[in-house]
Length: 154
Image (cartoon, rainbow, N blue to C red):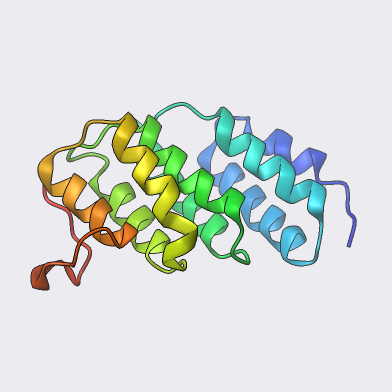
């Protein structure tokens, strides 16, 4: 299904999170209906974002990551999720975002996420707890019994 989604992408850049969230919902609908341009543009939009630094940024990114993760599994979605971990600092403000992303990545086959997560660990310095959780999701180490709820404490 081809539909011109350019107006929806303009809404993403307007700065109003309510308008942007409605636009994300519509864009995701068009992607599920097979609109390849909408998918390509959503991935590009995600790559253009800076780090989430405020609680409002985090809430918006959680919604964006949910939209991406709700789509059929694709390597570009894995890249987008890992990119968010790369650009956003891990701290108490961003804990919810990290938790959501790692939970979503854990739903992918290990062979799809091991490489990107290994590269992430080589590029970014994380606290020992975050590093361990990323390694668990990547399948590089066995999970600890108390990590089943995916909560990450900094």
